Amino acid sequence: MKPVKRVAVIHDLSVVGKAALTNIIPVLSVMGVEVCPIPTMILSTHTGGFGVPEVIKLPRFIDGCNNHYKKIGITFDTLFVGYLGSEDAIKSSIDFINENKGTNVVLDPIFGDGGLCYSNFTMEYVNSIKKLIPFSDIITPNYTEACFLTGEDYNEEFTEEKLIRIYKKLLKIGAKKIVITSIPSYIKNHLGIGIFNGEDFNVFYKEKSEKSYPGTGDIFTSVLIGKMINGLNLYDSALCAHYFVSSCIVESSKYDYPTKEGVLLEKNLKLLL
Image 1 (cartoon, rainbow, N blue to C red):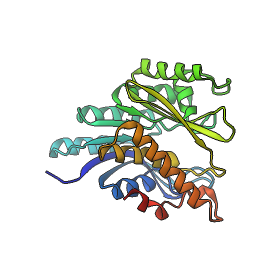
Image 2 (spheres, rainbow, N blue to C red; image 1 turned 45 degrees about the vertical axis):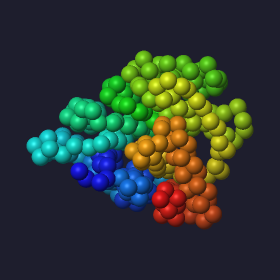
Image 3 (cartoon, one colour; image 1 turned 180 degrees about the horizontal axis):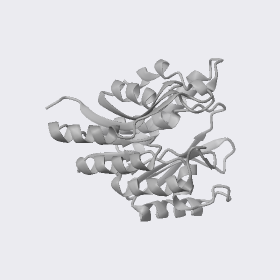
């Protein structure tokens, strides 16, 4: 038996500007996990501030990988489903999951932040990505995405009752375990992370960083997966993931460079050893 766990990651690959697979591969690798990237598209840069990137979409690559692995008997311990970008990729991801029954599935339904969908996404796409939720063991939406998935108004005043409504609606859609990031707080300059492990619901708040960097959600979910593969429960894994992302932001904030380039991941990977 191979001495390391294997994770298939269905996500995009940006060459410049650390996000998506550029962050996921080193994080999981240093945690002792084999990463098998299945890119949904390749971009010259990520889409947050570098102008219009060169993009090569790979609409049939997920299906091609799925068919090949089925023929040669390749299986995975975990499937990490991230940026898909099209309804075809959503359908292909469901097919991939169905060919790997019994494998732990983590879904980060990437389509928005700050109360808005990203410019290339519509509510039709949001409704389509809901189809993946019943196939997932853990979902990690941010607060914006959780609101859109459940039909809650992001701009409505945040209350604990509203958060509970969101969790109940996600469970009704088919979610099993849920981690919601970037939850508003009553405390000034704080954000929360809400965790439902299938039985208990907990929220913890931490001070918000002054600077914001792309790709931190990818890092968060990667650390969460790595910690769980290495034996931690969901709650402790989420705390470790939040601590690591915070450490990356603190270190990166010491240097004067454009935040669009992402956190200085390389200086912090040793913390995961």
